[in-house]
Figure (cartoon, rainbow, N blue to C red):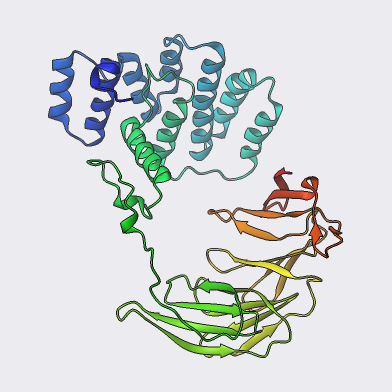
Length: 395
C-alpha cells in the first residue's frame, strides 16, 4: 500500500521536520516553518520543563510536571527521575545533609513500596559519588522522561532519524544481497540485484587428501586455515590484489581428527582442537606454545575469543565450558552444565554466551547405528558471562 503526505497527520509531520531542523541547527528554516505552518514543536510547558531540568531547577521541574495532566503512574515515575537526579547531584557536590533531606522528604514517600530502591539510593551515602558531566547527566533524565510523557507533548529525541534508520534496517533485513547498510541510500529503494552477489568459483585449491571439515579466517581476512579428515591443517595466505591464494604452512600427522580451528583476533595465536585436547600455536612460525591436558572429556565443539583476546572459551560435548588465556592458562571451569554443547556463540557485546545442544544424558542408539535425540532433549541456553547464571533457555 502506497501512502501520500495526506495520509499522515499534518501536525505530526511538521513536528518531526521541526525537530530535525532544530537538531541540524537550521534556525531560520525552523522559524520559517513554525510561522508558516502555525505549528509549534512543543508546548510552552515542555520547553520550560526542558530548560528547568538542564539548569537544575528541580522545584520548578516538579511544578511543570504536575501541569501536564499525566496519569498517576507516569507522574510518579517522572518525579522519581527528577528527585533521584537532584539527590545524586547533591551527593556529587558534597552536600550530604541536603541530599539526605531529599531522600527522606521526597524519595522515601514516593518509593514507599520499593524498599530495594531506597536501600540502593541510601548506599550512595556510604561511598564517594561523583557526576563527571552534569549536562550529559541531565540530558539522560530528559531522554528517560520520554518513557512517561506522551509523545504528543514530548517528542522522542531524534524521532525522524530513528524512523529513517528503521526504514534502512527494514530494507537491509528484507533484501538478500545487501552486505553493508552503508551502501543503502535514503534517496533510492534497495533493489534485489543478485548480480551484485558472487555466484561463481573465484578460486579452486587442492591440497588435502580427504574431505575438508572446517575453515577459519583471521580477523583481517588475509589468512585462513582448513582442517581435513586427512588429519592435517593447512594455513593459506590471500593476495586480493593478484587474486591468488598461497599455501604457507602444512601441519599434519595428528593422532585424531581436528574438530575446531580458530585464530585469535590479534592474529598472534592459532588454536586447534583435536577431539578433547587444545593446541596453541604461535602464528609467527606455527610452533606449539601450549598443549592442554585432558581438561575436556569429549569432543570440543567450538572455540570463541572475546574482543580483546583476554579469554578463550572452549565448549564440548562433555557438558563443560572452559575459560583460557592466550598462554594456555585455565582461568575457570564450568562443570556439569545441563546440555551436551554441540555449538556456541558469544553475543556481540561479549556479555553472554549462547549454548546449543541436547540434554546431558547420552542419546539413544538406533538399530541402524545412528544417534537419536528426542525433541525434549534439544535445548538452547544463554548464560551471563559475569555472573555465570543462566538468564534464558528454550527447549
